[in-house]
Length: 208
Image (tube, helix red, strand yellow):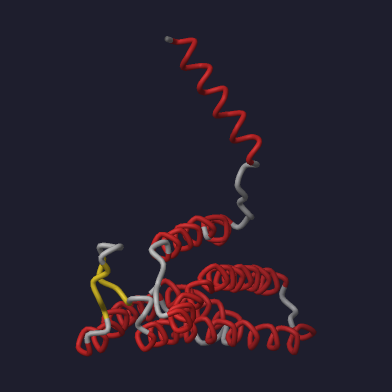
């Protein structure tokens, strides 16, 4: 569902740049409707798997989800939930860049040029965001391959998958904040975090 949310943001920027005179494509009510459709689609994606019994209860995970040994379910969720919105977002980005390069010389108004530059910057960050998430999630695809070769799944695969998921969620904070605030947000250096932690511990010791 998250990938489709990013796709809606990319579609909005695409319409602002490629079709600036078509106000209906930039309507707030349109994207409210699309968000509702997106939520319905997210539920509908799971329904076939529930009917066919592809979602299993994992003893080591305590959650009902696609087991790494379920090749059909893994391929389905990977194609529909990740590859489809990611591919469409990339295509919208390429189409937008070609449009801007083709009509760049015809852009006269400075305000319009500034708006286009801002929208392209946001779209670029969205593409980088999805690329990072896809790269982080890539090791998930290796687990079914390991199962196909060895016939077993190590116990560490579930914690490994959750570690990748948490890392992906943490890594998207700077790009998301950049899209909201307009400037790039970065994490403090590890050395600075360590020094602040030492100061905090010493301060608590002195208070005691």
